[in-house]
Image (cartoon, rainbow, N blue to C red; front, side):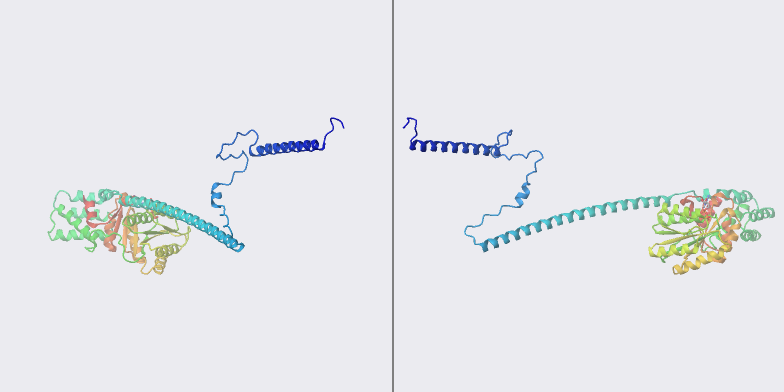
Length: 453
Ligand code: GDP
């Protein structure tokens, strides 16, 4: 046996040592792998208790809220039977669903509350805006209605400078009354646009009293004329003070405004609307002057200024139809007053009076008792023609009130004396300019005063 020959025991020992070495290598490799997975290469060593931040681009970890919402189920109690485990899982499931349902309901309630608050806020803002608009409009209406305009005396300046000035010159200074003065008086009165009838009445009343020696001097004659004119304008005492358009109980109170073209109807309707609105009435305008496109536009401007809605027909359309629609709408919208403008001239050959009679009949069908007032607008500058017009309109339509416009532009204002004497219809307003305040309620005393100052 060679001295290097291994015994069986030696071989076993070497084998054991080799196996032990192999085990140590394997264990070393596993440890190294474990360390690699726990700490990526290049990363600083993790401090205990500090969560690692996700690498850029890596999916974020599930939010804590969700993790909190799904707590790990408690460990099954020891010794739980399968049936008990089944029942426990069902109970856990039901509890989870109930929690989800109440969370959903809570969110819905919060959403509804937020929507309700938003709706309330929007409604409040709309109410505030409407109130601001209403106040601004009321202020504008008050301003328009309160426009002072010219004084009556200023509006009658030309008439005062006409026949009234001639009377004053003739009858001033207290000179004795003789035939020549009476002859001059006759000439002045018969050329004064007050109409033959009124001139005769005035002259007769003076002659009578001169004859009976009641009137001695010219100044007294002047006073007597003034008193007689006041009597005529007050319709022999029937009218005391102002008699402006009165709004009765019927709703809507329907006012028909008539007159020849250019007399000032549309302007007067606008001014009246402003006055009525200023007095607190709701007003609707009927643009029955379908002959003039400008009349509809003019009325629309007035409506917008004073806050009155308007019913407008087609140009050249049926005026009666427009007025009917205006009254119907006024009734539906519970408006206080419907002011119906009308044409003063027609497209057709049909006589104006026949067409206006039709408007009146149609209005009566639209509302019981309508029109409640028929106002005739007369242009004072037409002088005695106005008396003839008034007679014609009154015969056809039964005029209940007069409005005499443009007194500021004429010396023929005496026409109002002739109209009152002949027709015995109350004068409601006189126009002395284009502003709302220039439409003055007519007061016989104030008129005579303004005429003779
Ligand atoms: P309509 O054809 O009868 O509707 O007449 P308008 O209303 O269109 O009026 C004709 C013109 O007369 C317009 O220029 C008005 O401004 C004017 N007018 C109306 N009333 C008066 C007034 O009292 N004085 C003055 N100076 N002009 C007036």
